[in-house]
Length: 163
Image (cartoon, rainbow, N blue to C red; front, top):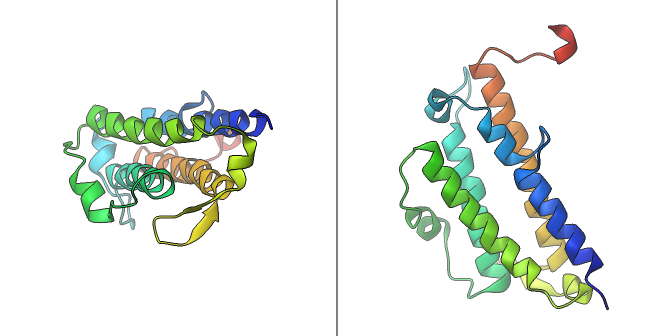
Protein backbone atom coordinates (compact mmCIF):
# COMPACT_ATOMS: atom_id res chain seq x y z
CA UNK A 1 0.00 0.00 0.00
CA UNK A 2 1.21 3.51 -0.77
CA UNK A 3 1.40 6.76 1.17
CA UNK A 4 -0.82 8.96 -0.98
CA UNK A 5 -3.41 9.49 1.76
CA UNK A 6 -0.74 10.17 4.39
CA UNK A 7 0.82 12.79 2.13
CA UNK A 8 -2.61 14.37 1.63
CA UNK A 9 -3.20 14.53 5.38
CA UNK A 10 0.23 16.11 5.87
CA UNK A 11 -0.60 18.69 3.21
CA UNK A 12 -3.92 19.50 4.93
CA UNK A 13 -2.20 19.70 8.32
CA UNK A 14 0.31 22.21 6.98
CA UNK A 15 -2.30 24.25 5.13
CA UNK A 16 -4.58 24.47 8.17
CA UNK A 17 -1.66 25.40 10.39
CA UNK A 18 0.42 27.76 8.27
CA UNK A 19 -1.04 27.96 4.78
CA UNK A 20 -1.01 31.30 2.98
CA UNK A 21 -4.76 31.86 2.90
CA UNK A 22 -6.95 33.55 5.47
CA UNK A 23 -8.11 30.28 7.01
CA UNK A 24 -4.81 29.06 8.46
CA UNK A 25 -4.13 29.38 12.15
CA UNK A 26 -0.78 31.15 11.82
CA UNK A 27 -2.11 33.53 9.19
CA UNK A 28 -4.87 34.56 11.57
CA UNK A 29 -2.40 34.92 14.43
CA UNK A 30 -0.21 37.17 12.28
CA UNK A 31 -3.08 39.65 11.99
CA UNK A 32 -3.18 40.24 15.75
CA UNK A 33 -1.68 43.39 17.19
CA UNK A 34 0.46 42.81 20.28
CA UNK A 35 -2.27 44.30 22.48
CA UNK A 36 -4.84 41.84 21.05
CA UNK A 37 -3.10 38.78 22.52
CA UNK A 38 -4.13 39.54 26.09
CA UNK A 39 -7.42 41.36 25.46
CA UNK A 40 -10.96 40.06 25.83
CA UNK A 41 -13.46 41.14 23.21
CA UNK A 42 -16.56 42.88 24.60
CA UNK A 43 -18.78 40.21 26.12
CA UNK A 44 -16.14 37.54 25.51
CA UNK A 45 -14.28 35.37 27.96
CA UNK A 46 -11.29 33.98 26.06
CA UNK A 47 -8.12 35.80 25.11
CA UNK A 48 -6.16 34.96 21.98
CA UNK A 49 -3.17 33.62 23.91
CA UNK A 50 -5.49 31.31 25.90
CA UNK A 51 -6.91 29.88 22.68
CA UNK A 52 -3.41 29.35 21.29
CA UNK A 53 -2.41 27.66 24.56
CA UNK A 54 -5.41 25.32 24.15
CA UNK A 55 -4.59 24.53 20.51
CA UNK A 56 -0.94 23.85 21.32
CA UNK A 57 -1.81 21.70 24.32
CA UNK A 58 -4.11 19.61 22.13
CA UNK A 59 -1.32 19.05 19.61
CA UNK A 60 0.99 17.76 22.34
CA UNK A 61 -1.76 15.67 23.97
CA UNK A 62 -2.95 14.07 20.73
CA UNK A 63 0.64 13.27 19.75
CA UNK A 64 1.41 11.78 23.16
CA UNK A 65 -1.73 9.65 23.46
CA UNK A 66 -1.97 8.45 19.87
CA UNK A 67 1.71 7.84 19.18
CA UNK A 68 3.71 7.83 22.44
CA UNK A 69 3.26 6.95 26.13
CA UNK A 70 -0.03 8.75 26.74
CA UNK A 71 1.07 10.18 30.07
CA UNK A 72 0.53 13.90 29.52
CA UNK A 73 -2.40 15.66 31.16
CA UNK A 74 -3.89 19.10 30.61
CA UNK A 75 -2.01 20.24 33.69
CA UNK A 76 1.39 18.84 32.71
CA UNK A 77 1.27 19.99 29.10
CA UNK A 78 0.23 23.48 30.14
CA UNK A 79 2.79 23.62 32.94
CA UNK A 80 5.51 22.34 30.63
CA UNK A 81 5.12 25.20 28.18
CA UNK A 82 7.44 27.51 30.08
CA UNK A 83 6.65 30.53 27.89
CA UNK A 84 5.55 34.00 28.76
CA UNK A 85 2.77 35.67 26.89
CA UNK A 86 4.98 37.17 24.21
CA UNK A 87 3.51 36.23 20.81
CA UNK A 88 6.80 34.90 19.43
CA UNK A 89 7.22 32.57 22.42
CA UNK A 90 3.65 31.30 22.22
CA UNK A 91 3.87 30.74 18.47
CA UNK A 92 7.22 28.97 18.86
CA UNK A 93 5.70 26.57 21.38
CA UNK A 94 2.63 26.08 19.16
CA UNK A 95 4.90 25.28 16.21
CA UNK A 96 6.80 22.70 18.28
CA UNK A 97 3.49 20.99 19.03
CA UNK A 98 2.52 21.02 15.37
CA UNK A 99 5.91 19.70 14.29
CA UNK A 100 5.75 16.90 16.87
CA UNK A 101 2.30 15.74 15.79
CA UNK A 102 3.24 16.09 12.13
CA UNK A 103 6.39 14.01 12.64
CA UNK A 104 4.34 11.10 13.96
CA UNK A 105 1.95 11.26 11.02
CA UNK A 106 4.86 11.53 8.57
CA UNK A 107 6.45 8.43 10.14
CA UNK A 108 3.47 6.20 9.32
CA UNK A 109 4.65 3.41 7.02
CA UNK A 110 1.71 3.37 4.65
CA UNK A 111 -1.93 4.37 4.26
CA UNK A 112 -3.18 1.25 6.05
CA UNK A 113 -1.92 2.81 9.30
CA UNK A 114 -4.54 5.53 8.96
CA UNK A 115 -7.13 2.87 9.81
CA UNK A 116 -5.29 1.73 12.95
CA UNK A 117 -7.12 2.63 16.14
CA UNK A 118 -5.14 4.78 18.54
CA UNK A 119 -5.99 6.28 21.88
CA UNK A 120 -7.35 9.80 22.12
CA UNK A 121 -6.35 11.89 25.11
CA UNK A 122 -9.69 11.19 26.81
CA UNK A 123 -9.11 7.41 26.51
CA UNK A 124 -11.40 6.50 23.62
CA UNK A 125 -9.99 4.53 20.71
CA UNK A 126 -10.31 6.22 17.29
CA UNK A 127 -8.90 5.55 13.85
CA UNK A 128 -5.69 7.46 13.16
CA UNK A 129 -7.33 9.29 10.26
CA UNK A 130 -10.09 10.50 12.58
CA UNK A 131 -7.56 11.87 15.09
CA UNK A 132 -5.57 13.63 12.37
CA UNK A 133 -8.73 15.05 10.79
CA UNK A 134 -9.87 16.46 14.12
CA UNK A 135 -6.54 18.22 14.58
CA UNK A 136 -6.78 19.72 11.08
CA UNK A 137 -10.29 20.96 11.80
CA UNK A 138 -9.15 22.19 15.22
CA UNK A 139 -6.59 24.55 13.65
CA UNK A 140 -9.17 25.89 11.22
CA UNK A 141 -11.86 26.27 13.87
CA UNK A 142 -9.67 28.18 16.29
CA UNK A 143 -8.07 30.15 13.45
CA UNK A 144 -11.57 31.41 12.68
CA UNK A 145 -12.17 32.13 16.34
CA UNK A 146 -8.94 34.15 16.51
CA UNK A 147 -10.00 36.00 13.36
CA UNK A 148 -13.32 36.95 14.91
CA UNK A 149 -11.74 38.10 18.17
CA UNK A 150 -9.25 40.18 16.18
CA UNK A 151 -11.95 41.74 14.05
CA UNK A 152 -14.00 42.72 17.10
CA UNK A 153 -10.99 44.12 18.95
CA UNK A 154 -9.75 46.03 15.90
CA UNK A 155 -13.20 47.29 14.87
CA UNK A 156 -13.20 45.48 11.52
CA UNK A 157 -15.98 42.96 12.18
CA UNK A 158 -17.81 43.32 8.89
CA UNK A 159 -17.90 41.71 5.47
CA UNK A 160 -15.50 43.12 2.89
CA UNK A 161 -18.40 44.02 0.57
CA UNK A 162 -19.92 46.17 3.35
CA UNK A 163 -16.95 48.51 3.66
